[in-house]
Each structure stands twice: as structure tokens, then as C-alpha cells.
Amino acid sequence: MSPISDWDTPGAVFTGADSTAVLVLFVVLGILIVIGFLVKMVQHENHAYAQMINHEPVERGPAAEGEPPVY
Image (cartoon, rainbow, N blue to C red; front, side, top):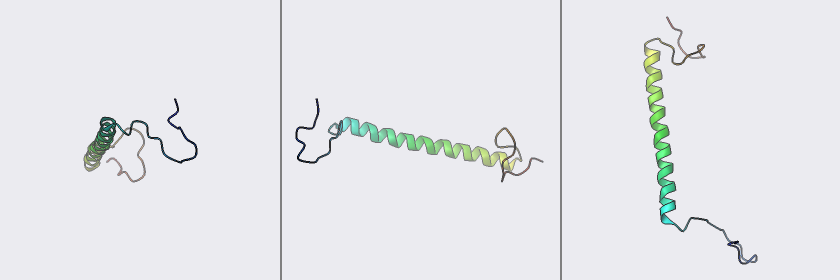
């Protein structure tokens, strides 16, 4: 079934937008994803800075530009 009943009047069709629960779910999910990303980023940066201070490689593999050499 098409939600369009008339082709003469332009309009937008929103599926699920009339449900407050779905809207709240998507907003909360989006906020949790951003918070999770920020937490993982801070953890990685703290680990990387600790490794650089200890003159240890941050990650396995060849040294990348900008990393201090291992003494």
C-alpha cells in the first residue's frame, strides 16, 4: 500500500516518525554510539602517550613518521 494518495500536493512521507518510542530509541542509540567512540578514542590516546613516554612502540610493525625511535 502506498502512503501517497494524491500526486498533486507535494509532501514528505515519514515512516516511523509518528512513533515516539522509535524516535527516542534512535536518538539514544546515536548518543551511545558517539559516547562509545569518544571513550575508545581516549583509551587509545592514553595508551599511545604512555607507550611514547616509555620509548616503546605504540603498535606492532615498522615505525611510522612522527614516532620517536625506540632506544
